[in-house]
Length: 303
Image 1 (tube, rainbow, N blue to C red):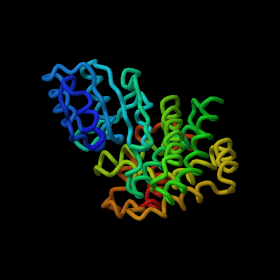
Image 2 (image 1 turned 45 degrees about the vertical axis):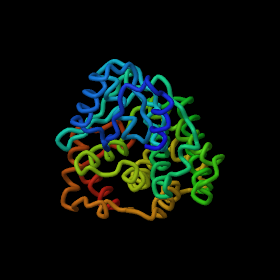
Image 3 (image 1 turned 135 degrees about the vertical axis):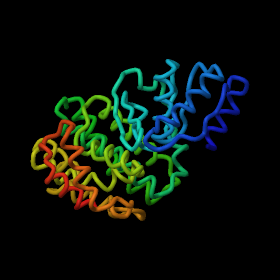
Image 4 (image 1 turned 180 degrees about the vertical axis):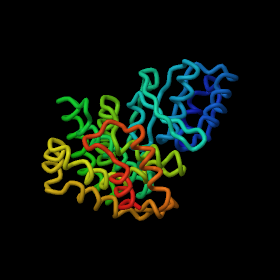
């Protein structure tokens, strides 16, 4: 909000309107409100300053109105680099992919990330890490996306501990932001798999915090998928220096000082089979074919 206030002041009379109530998972009702504000003001561009929720809302407004968008990310979500939008209505999150959704201009400024709390820094960076990891086992991965994803994973794993140790230093923040940027490109160029599907299904059904959800699911999905994705497993082993990359990621996730289990987010244990069935009924492409029993077991571990 502080950064947005500075930009609004600098725009002066060119500021058509402000909307300061983005919500996680881009509820269509909130989008309708913001779209009405933009249309009534005659806005000819939308500028998003914030995390994935703000950027998702701007995408939704832009695609409905046809106006261009500028994204100024203050977290590591990577959403600003993708032609992807997840929208929620009646507890169901639907994902769409359209080149018109991608912001035309993105501004990265590590100074805007210096005030991120340590917990959000960790979970947001792990959100970016999930984009890169999942790109490594995507069915449409290429040599280019493999290279970008490997560089992104190495960047996140290398810079995140430095950022957490010294949050006020801009240089490690810039490296982490660069790694998140690469992860966003990976997400834009490859198809999402089981990890993102679980985040969408659970997040939409229970209105869960997106970054924390990514952080607590990633290691479990890696353990589930890597035996069926040997090339991805080999790359991740080289990057992490471990025969068990999932354990390395689990260590990062478990060090979070907030919720680290689905149970701590209020997800009921008896809802897990239904969530698994929703995944199996319309699976995203994935190296290991999801079954209701297998996905339920994965979720039970995360729970």
